[in-house]
Amino acid sequence: MEREPVDGVEPEAVELEGSDGFAGVPDEFQRLWTPHRMVYIEGGPQPHIDECPFDRAPTLSDEEGLIVARGEHAYVLLNLFPYNSGHLLVCPYRHVSTYDLATDAEVAEIASLTQTAMRVLTAVSNCDGFNIGMNQGRVAGAGVAGHLHQHIVPRWASDANFFPIIARTKALPQLLGDVRATIQAAWPQVD
Image (cartoon, rainbow, N blue to C red):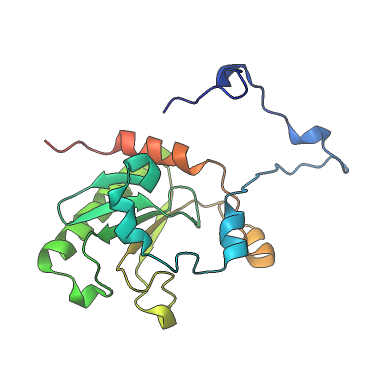
């Protein structure tokens, strides 16, 4: 994915500013700025009230919908509010709320896409493990309860810190568009 010039400056010419010159006492911590999380923090756990984001995503381009792979019955996209970099969701195209309502073909493709996602995430991010699961119904923690979706969260031995506990925020080192492009580029092509 090529980056566009900003104010006439080519991206390669832009130097990233280190945090060592910022206000405060210098310390050994790296600063990870994740402003995209503010939409979630300020909007609460259900920002998509008017329409189902999983019905809408496949109607958009892969870039706009954060989609990394499309199958016949299901597709894979990045979580807009990820727990970790590379947090993927596998959704059937059909608007169905729970796993028991999915067809055999949908279940099989969700499983197959999940396996492929695990292989791709391991290859591109060297993750140490995964959290994989589905929250069925609002009472069980589903943020979008009306549309079945399976979470695939890559995990690393050193990915946990105090942010999620104290600040209810997760620091993510890559922008969503960059993560999507990396995963999609590594996804096996089907003929």
